Length: 271
Image (cartoon, rainbow, N blue to C red; front, side, top):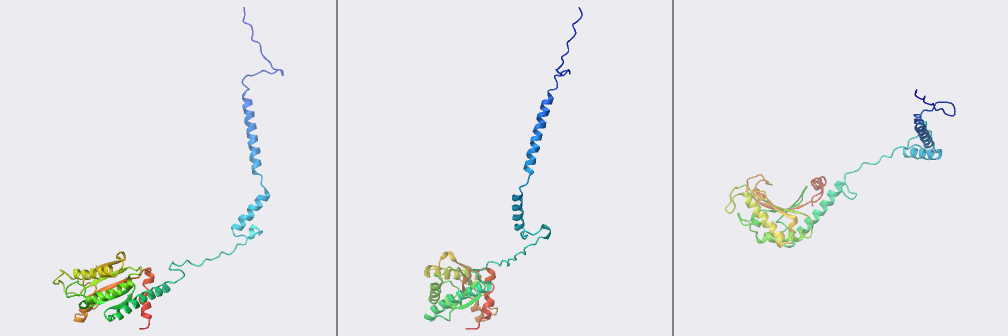
């Protein structure tokens, strides 16, 4: 028997039905999604004229353009030039004014010390000088304050230091005690001038702290030996000037202010 021929299936329209045409449903879904996306993008691109105008006015004001002026004829507001910022020197004072005030304070300390010395009849035993470091109270002439080649203080030295310490103790200023010697090398009690000058400076410091109440955390002592003479001659008077101990009341102002003190002192008339 011959095989039975396969029957063809036809749709209602008379066309042949293909089972692989299901891809068209996915394609139509994709087209629908794309159409929805473009509609959303178009809706987002629409401009609210009122909000745009408010934004334009705000940006124009921020960039200094006069409100309402056309963009092609924008008028810029003149910039405000600020004065240059000066270096911080103090509450409204210039460097010169600060130096003058500092010198006034140092002179007040000098006058108080000198008054105490005058009451004891010792006003001629010290020398006062002002420089960029501050006020220097010079104890000049070792014979007045120390025994020869020794660091022990004389009774006069103690009286002078008492007159100084009563003024320095209440202040907050730092103090440097600096010992100096004339150049004669080795001494009987000290191997070099360094030890002699340092020993004398240390004795002065101890008396200012222990006997005068100067705070130990703001005072120090150093010995310079014969390295910093104030007189270059070889006479007995010059050598006596180089044998000294300086009590330096240090200025706490900035360097640019302290450097002006010597010039201000030089312009002052003599007392």
